[in-house]
Image 1 (cartoon, rainbow, N blue to C red):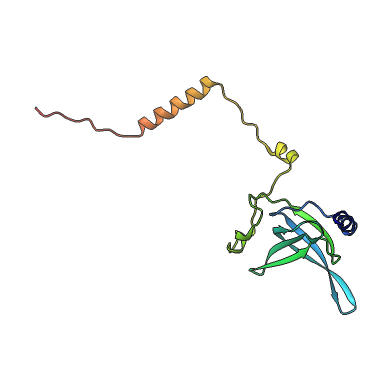
Image 2 (tube, helix red, strand yellow; image 1 turned 90 degrees about the horizontal axis):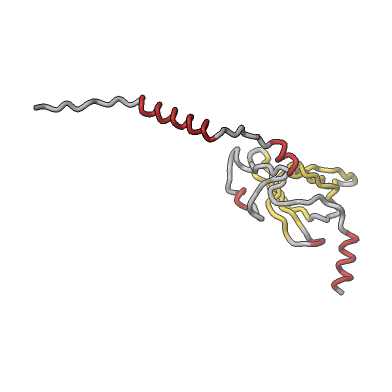
Length: 158
């Protein structure tokens, strides 16, 4: 019975990109107005992923005119035309509900997770100084610190 249900679910599942909390995505959602059907783009940050399989859903949050708006999308809904990932977010939590409390410019700002190839390209190689050179620099710094202070000599009265 379980295997039969899994097979039916696999047939109905569409190809979706790998999504994680913190990713900024665009959801192309089909909206029916009367006889017409149009696609509305909803861009925001994934706050949470829920459930598994065909019942999987995502909570997407965006700031619209200074007001936070959240929307729940069933991931394998026939109403979703496509989902594109704009940038991958670097977060340490599975549920980003703390974004609800953040107000202003910092709301929704999440650091971008770089891919391995981009990490290697952006890494800066610092020139390595020999130990003797480093010791000389430290000595110079110590001398400069001592010169800046004025000390008064104590006079002994006899």
